[in-house]
Every structure is written in structure tokens, then in C-alpha cells.
Image (cartoon, rainbow over all chains, first blue to last red; front, side, top):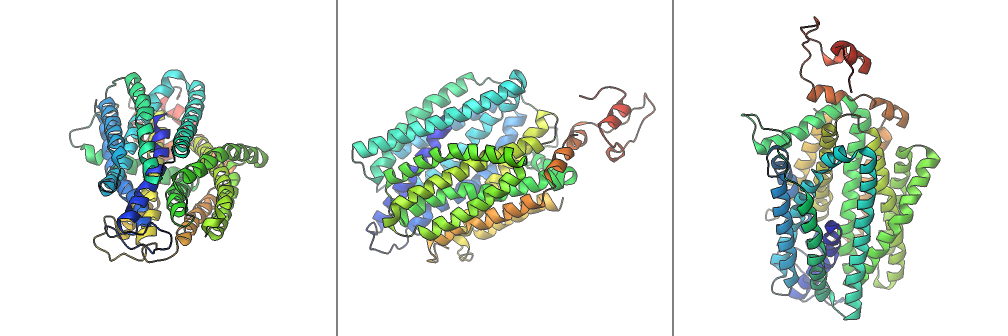
Length: 417
Length: 83
């Protein structure tokens, strides 16, 4: 439940950071062309933040995963990461003109901590699944998704409502968003970790194994096993997920910057648009279900979804070029919502159907691969966006070359093992 | 792209490249019914979790996993039900 508010609060904070960066270089007015601040255009900041947190996650998450898996500190990791997340969120309430840059750096760290929170929480799922049985677990999963969805909507209504009622500007809305987020998500995290119990290590390390190497090795072992035994089915699917998720996840980051920079949207306008996007996911899910039943093949449904996504994406970014077209942006917001609602459940359905039957442990490893692949590819388009023509810029925190190396490594993991 | 002054809309459109590659990957997957057939038996479970088969008591040893054609084969080798 807490994750929903944290995710949504990023929208308001991102808008505030872009605005503050523009104010620092006096290009907040529409007519003025923006220069650079700390080496980047204000419009690049959100994607740079996403890139940094993506790299941090890819480098350190397998290590955190190994601690969770091979030591008795799983609950401690969860509690500490939640505390750190809440601490960062609380500090970010103070995002003002003099503090925006450290807050932007904190936002990159925030992305990584958020992944650790998720990792620690998800690590309990196989055990919960075994304890309550598959059917109950399916019901629980559906209920958790609905609750998270509802809390996201409630949070958006509260912040947008507050912003409109009190006449807040972008910066104040960002602060207000964080202020609402801290107690709302904090209480959820508190109760979550109160009920998660301390459990022993799932696996003991042998004398020669290190915590740092184990996580990577496990992912590599599972990936090569998938390639060897299920290459034409699960292997291609995971590769497809890697690229599709890259586009879908990055879309949100790009959309915030695009709406702010090109369409001239303020915080509350962007919030309303994302509210419409979330509402659009409901008919999207039903559309996906109906098409899957019609075609009797989720793979075909997914291919249709991707074709539709490409067409709508192209039309959206081609048509939405001026602030006067704001009403058209809401229409595209609804369409994007429908597409995302169609995309995620269909992908999950395919995953659940083509994962080999067997012990939850193996299933979990495959989920780890899926998770890592999403993170890896999240870096790539962001880096592409910022650094494609700028490879030689050595002071870049994350270069295109680094991202390409990650991609190469990942491709080899699948295709050459 | 953005830093070089290329319009942001092309940044948004370039995401289509990833969606297209995903589409190609889905296209390369086996037909759906064959995908479902392929995962009926968990081959990875045997490779990663079951120790090497060296069943001396029943006179069976040095059996390669590739020699076992299916689930029934595993049951035969171990002479017991496999869950």
C-alpha cells in the first residue's frame, strides 16, 4: 500500500525539481530558452535521476538480494530500508530554491532504496504462498493490487485537491505531495514490517562463496538454464519483457518532463492527467482479458498491444506539440492508461503460464531475472535519451557506454551462455 | 538527444524502438500451444536442485540428465513418485 503513494509522489516532486532548476537559470518563462544547470538542461534532470538510480539498483540489488537470501537479516534490511525511504521523503519536504539540487541527488538514492524495500517485501511472497496455498495467494495478490490502486487514486485526489483548493504553485505542490506521502505511506510500512516475521536464512553460503558474488551468480545460473532449456519460449519472452518494460517504465519519466516542458502543464495538471491514466487502466485490463479470451492466445494479445502502443505513442508525441492542445493530452492520457492496463496484466498472465512448473524457489529465481532485466533496461533508454549523441562527455555520471556494457552483458547472459 | 537540442517528442517516439524489438521477440517465441507444452516438466529443477544421480543401491549410476526423456523417466530412475 505504501508503494502507491511513494510512486505517485515522484510525479509532483519531479515537476517541482524541474521548475526550481529553471528558476535557478532564469528560464522559467515560456519565452526564454533554457541553458544548462549543473551541466544539464533542466528537462534532462528527471531522466538523469532515473539513470543514476537505475545504475545503483543494478549494481547493488543482487548484493542486497544475497543478504536477504543468505543471512538472518531479511527483516532488518526491510525495516532499515523503509526507515531510510521515509527519512528521504521527509527531508524532501524541504525542497526549495536553495536545496533543490541535493534533493534531486537524494531522489536518485530514493529510487534505489525503493527497490530495496520492494525486494525485501517480495522475498516473503514465496513463503506466504506456501503457507496459505496457491488459490488464497491468488486472491490476496488481486486484493493487494486493488488496494494499492485505490491508495494511489486517493493520494492523487488529496494532493490535486489540496493544490487546487489552496492555490499552490508547482514547488509548493511538490512539498505538499511529500508531506502527505510521509504519514500516508509511513503508517503502511510500519504495519507491514510489524507483521513480517524474522525468519532464518533460506540458504547458507559455503566457505568459498561471497555475498557479493552469490546474487550475480544465481541470476546468471538461472538465466543460462532458461536459455538452455526454455530458450524458444521463456527465453524470448523474458527478452521481450526486457525491452517492453524498458519503454513502459521510462514512459512515465519522459511523460512528466514532456508535459511540463512542451505542454506547459503545472503540477496539478500533470496529477490530473496521471489520475486519468490510472482510471484508463481499468478498461484496459478488461480489454486485454476480452482479447485474450477472443484469441485464446495471450501472446497474440500482447503483440496487438505492442502494435497499438507504438501507434498511440507515435501519434501522441507527434500531435502534442503546443500548450494549446492540453485537452488532447487528456485524451491521449486515457489511451495510454488503457494501453498500460492492457500491457501489465497480459504480461503477468504470459509469465505465470509459461514459467515451468516446480518449486517456488526456481520460480522466484526467474522472477529475480525478470526483475533485474527490468532494471537493466530501464537504464538503457534513459541513457539513450540523454547521452546518445554525447558519449564523449566524461563528466557524465552515467555514460551511454556504461549502459551499453550493461546491455551487452545482459544480452550475452541470455544468448551466449 | 535532449542535450543536443533534438526535440523532446523524438525522445518520446524513440521508445517505440524498444516496443518494436519486444514485438519481434514475441514473434520469435514458439507458438503458444508449444510454449505451454515446453513447460509441463521443469527441466531446470532437476539441473539446479537435484544432486547428480548416482543410485548405487539400485545399480544406477552416472546418469546424465539428457538421458531422461520425461517425468516418467525420472520416476523410473528414482523408483519412486516424483512430486
